[in-house]
Image (tube, rainbow, N blue to C red; front, side, top):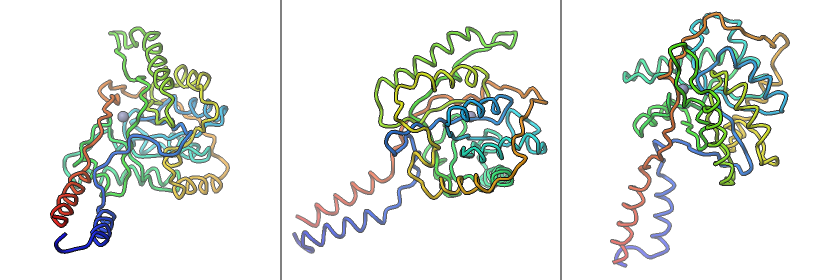
Length: 302
Ligand SMILES: [Zn+2]
């Protein structure tokens, strides 16, 4: 070794590694063992309230990745409909961002304004600003992920897709072969259960009637891991600080919060808004850093 002894080299490597801040990493899975985090995208909508009834009856807390302007076009003005988030908080669910209108603008200023607009609306009803987010359709490359991270969000994917979005509608507006759609969803979920994973981060949508009325009740009933705990995304990642924030708000919430909402709008169900599976793991820039460090170490050694 020419310039440095082995011990110092290890210290240098350790220090350098801790200084590296990993950027652009989407979170694909939970970290806490024996947890199941159900996540629901694209709402709120006319089925969300019924879903919360089901979750409440089963003692389950979940996470809602919400939009400000999506299925309920009048949500930004309609305080009665916004009460669904008050109720969600009261019942211990986590509200996270799914962007303002299910879209990530290319323009940075517009992106920031839209994210802030949703966070303001959520905060007005929950008492906290979302710090977890999911990109529309889960489509977000490394550069896009960094845009979220710079605004302070953790970007969440999933590792268990219910495929509740995988359907077509006929000319009558009805879902074609609904039984098959549901059967397929059950099979996909069962397949993941058969893998006996340590934890599950499940993608679902509270904007679909079949999800709320059939897939979720089936999931709860047939879940083979009775000792696993249904938790929020923050909890399944061991984020005690955020989890306690929800709990605090939960305790602080006041009386008139049991509002049920009805659809005044027959929201436009745009099939292009379905989240599709896109579970590719990002190549993190940390590998490049590690290779550089190792090359430097070898140089020093010889
Ligand atoms: Zn979505």
